[in-house]
Length: 162
Image 1 (cartoon, one colour):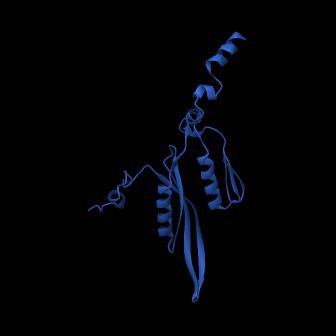
Image 2 (tube, one colour):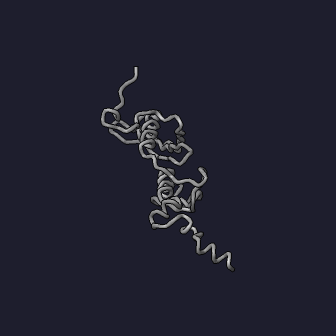
Image 3 (cartoon, helix red, strand yellow):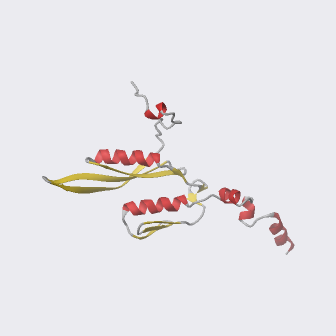
């Protein structure tokens, strides 16, 4: 017997369906300790990245007393925080980008500075958030894509005449 989804009760728009095409990758697990009167209380934090390999990606972190619960919380947060990244030919970025968070810096695929997994994931998402497709840039500038790339009709005529 299926349980009713909370999203459906609050007017969610299709978020209650399970999306099997999403792949999740566990980036890191960190054990943390809280010192209490009787000793130390251990907990775990997990960092997860989720994506569909077609331009949608999200990242999340979760904390719990048990590892599986921390991973589940991180995966849920990553699915909620999914963003669309414009891809060229469905597999690569349109241009080079730089992202920064804390001491971590992500330049295309090279990380500079801190190697802290939390900072690197956040710097990567900062960089992916700065990616724009040529169509989006052209619309923002009230031009066509060919004008953005410098391939408008007058430029073609000049090259033919020369």
